[in-house]
Length: 369
Image (cartoon, rainbow, N blue to C red; front, side, top):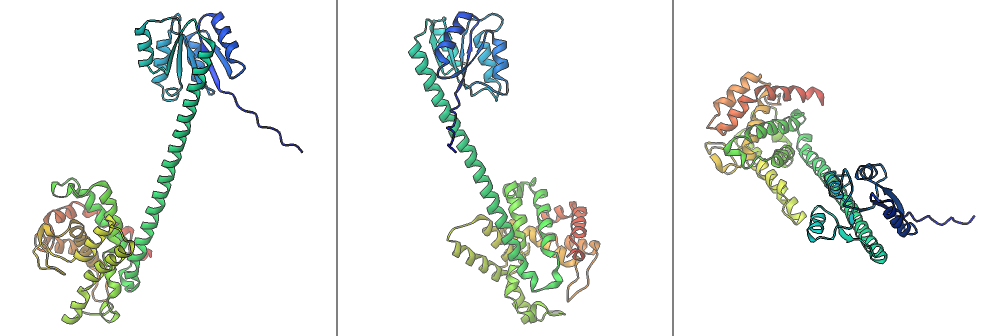
């Protein structure tokens, strides 16, 4: 069976003129090359232009009763759906000011009557080719934007899964921690959102960084992967030597993330904050924490938020070495640590968010594993 040749779709030209002879003249000139539509008024022209099958180009007279060509193009350009349709004025108005007005309103060309058929055909052809190129570039750009968005979302999803997988490694070593990662993520996010209005924190806690902190909070205990079971899982109080080993999980976490950075060969912003959380969430406001004895504002903001989130969750949850505390008991300890263990503004944020913390703890209770 022979393959039928494809029909080439003709461009649609709308000719707008209130004089029948002019419509007949232009239709006869264009009909062999293009599909021609005609309108004898501005109102009729706009109905065709705003229809489901708009023209590819408009040849527009200026001098028409009721609505002139200038008003037609004004209405076209204020409508997003028709703003890009090229308009060529085809008119007897030959004054320079008229041409300036027409071009300033958005016409792509201005041809005065009496017309030269070859000139009209050449300019129509040129402007249709320009429109085709603009449409192609627009479609290409839209496709590229969608592709970039898709790939960005894909990379973000991979990043999220990777972070959670890495964070979960530490919890596989200690089944008592349960949904600790999930809860601390939401605690940190709540604190970050609240403190974004605080002048001390707002410069850092942008919407983007709040999302980043939620993600990297999962890595705060990644270093526990390197702690021996006899220390990590000991059902009792650690002695001084064991405690010293346990404290190394902060630097082990930082080193693990640094190794990942080296393998990547590039600096990644979220890994910078992940290192801060992993390494410094046991630093104290008064400088008595570990591993480096940082104090006050020298402690990175991500670590200061995690300090409150981590301690609160540890207090209210059961561990091999302790029974869980009530929210009120945990709250008392957090408040007592104001300006000694914790940043005072972070403690104030915790107090303001008490009900939120309680809801998060209930939503991700370890019974829902």
